[in-house]
Image (cartoon, rainbow, N blue to C red; front, side, top):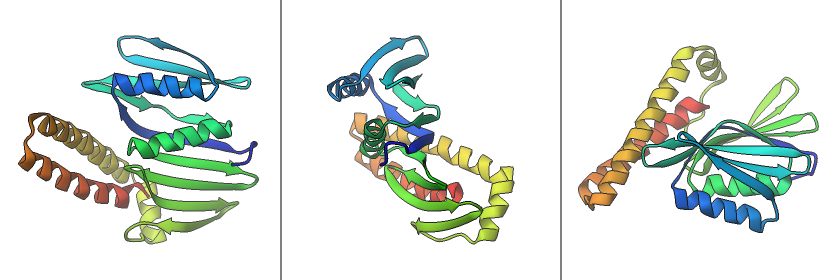
Length: 198
């Protein structure tokens, strides 16, 4: 990544437990970043200094851990690489936008894997990579201007959250049958999300 490139991370969906967050703090300190953190009943915030900028990573408390929330614009190449490694390692979801010169590259990431890669130059948009069935421009436009698509994505994400909770409970109980059912449902939901998100 070029030093002047900006990378925006949107719609992040990464889940952590307290130990993961402590390890993140250690990793960032080892990378040489100056940082501090604070905690309230609902949020854990890690503030990372990158040159003159301060990036505040916000972790929302959920039932059995934390979830990284918010959108982040990062101009620091090392911090961007760290964030992308984190998304991959945690098998998270995100939309990553890379701004360079007069071009934007957009990556849709689902379960830590790039499912769609789009290049935008001026008014032209080109799909560089698409995992799964390629939707027509008409279908994409219709979904883009329709709130129905957003509602369906929101519903599917909530279903994924619930299914992940069920999977976590089944793993804790050692219920192999329920684990298998949860994984099958998650595969189905991930395919649905792939079709809906881009």
